[in-house]
Image (cartoon, rainbow, N blue to C red; front, top):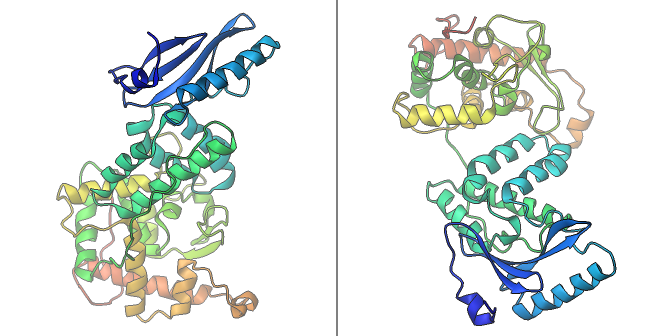
Length: 396
């Protein structure tokens, strides 16, 4: 068929992408989602090649023919016009994987979270589509589905990630524009969720017996509460970091890049199980890999959704906030709590502060352990020493 602007506008999407030839190797590809892109098909070095000439309507028919003429001139001069266009049909999934390998892994400690966010939130909707054909409306539609859950924080993190992926693609000359630009993030409200003593009692008594969740995941959730550390740091705990009842979190694994020393109370040690020489404290079902932070969040959401855990919705990070809130109620000095939480203190005093807070940290976490064990025994709202030890089936 003879391609005209009117004919191109009237091309309708089908279940599978298809191409309409315009002559001289020029054609326009129509994708199932309605996007359209120009392609130049030619022979170079005895091989059939394809070259992207841009997206329609950003690139008009007239501009496409201009680009086609330039490409044919390059071909006539014995050069491959598509030499810099090897990623012309790069899908969003391929682009995301390239971003993780070439950009995120070398620069971000949290690259695995980016990888998971792409796999769970982005790839199901856009993964198999050409990255160069993604529109702003495509991104808006994806984000609107997230916002409807409602999940404003996840909406904004996904928006930011998509922007980074496409900015990377632009820097690598893989695409010509970023479809996530000029999309505004949602307003986030500060989280203040923390568990009351009665809810902690429910968590301690109900969690160990819930079926369908691995003992390692359940124990890791409670160790987050017992130590007040970040869920991702707890999930990745390995026995090599445990030395004389101290958990020595290295800077490389700390989210803020600062090492930390956490006293392991009797409560914490019970959750960790039988000590080993090496390896993850909470191994996953995948080889020798530790459980992941997303696995903790997923399991918790599922238990609450299925009413196996009769507590108002909360996240693994809320367990860290719960610990910090309860420490204040137990009389733990704010500075000691900050040391345990590994909050960065950038004051001049902190720079010259070389005093070890090990004694205060140990005392605070032992006091917290006593309180948790008392709650487990049913003494809600009271402090006492001792208490029944939590036992997790399968954790030796």
